[in-house]
Amino acid sequence: MNYQGKRWRTIWRNLDDAAGSIGVIDQRLLPHEFKTLTLRTMGDCAEAIRNMTVRGAPLIGATAAYGICFALRDDPGDAGFAAAYRVLHKTRPTAINLKWALDQMQAAVGQLPPAKRLEAAYARAAELCDEDVAVCEAIGRNGLALFREIVAKKPAGSRLNILTHCNAGWLACVDWGTALAPIFMAHDTGLPIHVWVDETRPRNQGASLTAWELNRHGIPHTVVVDNAGGHLMQHGLVDLCIVGTDRTTAQGDVCNKIGTYLKALAAKDNQVPFYVALPSSTIDWTIRDGLKEIPIEERSPTEVTHLRGKTADGSLVEIQVTPDGSPAGNYGFDVTPARLVTALITEKGCCAASAEGLARLFHREV
Ligand code: MRU
Image (cartoon, rainbow, N blue to C red):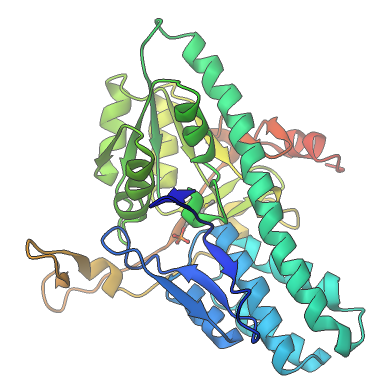
C-alpha cells in the first residue's frame, strides 16, 4: 500500500545488508507514529511476534519464515532448525498460519544438505511473502464481486455500509489484507462505501490500525465501540459484515479476534450477511470443531486494565482504567460457528462455510 508517496509492504528484506536482516513496521506505535524496525535474529522475530510489533495471521507466518532463515544462518543443521521451529511456533498459539509457514520452510529446506539451506530458506521466505500478496489480491477481487451483488440490490446511488472487526488489512498481511482487500478495491473502483470500524478492545486494532489504513486511503469510515454493532444492524445501518480469521476449521468454523462471535450473532438476528475472508493458509484441515479444538490465546491482563494513547501535547502515555486490584481476563480470540457465517471468501473463490463447501472449493475429500 502507499504511504507518504512510497509503496510499502509490511515486511521486507534489507538487500543492502550482507547479514540478511529484514525490516518491519512497528505496529505498536500506530496510528500515532510510523516507525520501522530491523530484525536480525531468530530471537528478534520471535519477540516481534510475541509483543505484537507484527501481528495478523499472515504477517506472523511471514515473520516466522524469516526467523527460520536467521536460525539457519547461525546453525544450518537439523537441530538448529528444530529448535527455531519450536521457539517460533510457541510465540502465538491461535493463528494457524504460523505453523503453516514453518511447515512450508521445513518442506523447502528439510531435504537439502545444510550448506544449501540458507539460500533456499531466504528464497522460500520471499516467495511466501509474494504469494501472500497475490492471494490477498485474489481475495479482494472475489470479495468485490460479492459487494457488487449487494450494491445491485440497493437503491441506485446509495452507499454500501460495511462493518469490520479488528484489523484484517494490509498491516495484518504482507499487502492488501483479507477483509479489507475488497474494501480497498471497492473504493478504488468508485463504489460508494462506508466502513463501521469496531474499536476492538483490548488492543484496539480497529481504532488504531484499521482506522489508520482507511484514513490513509481516503475511505469513509466511522470508529464505533465494540458493542455498537448490534444497534447499527437493528437500525438497518449495516449491509454486510466482513472479518478475517486466524484459523478456519475443515467444517468452516472461524476463530477470529475476540468479539467476532457477538457480531455474527447480531448479524444473524438482523439478516445481515456475515462474510469471512481468508487465505487458504488459514485453514486447519486437521480439525473440525473450532470450539473444542482451537487453542485460544490469553494475553496479559494489563492489556485490559490499561490503555495507550496520545495526549493533547502529543506524547504517548499509558493509563489505568480499572480499580487498583481488580483482576482482568484477556481472551484474544473467539470461535464463530460455521452456521453463523454466510460465506467464506478465499483466493480460490467463495464457498459455504461447511465441510462440503470447503472440500468442493479446494478439491478435497469431506
Ligand atoms: O491479535 P491480532 O492483532 O494478531 O489479531 C488479528 C486478527 O484477529 C485478524 O482478524 C486475523 O489475523 C485475520 S488478518 C488477515
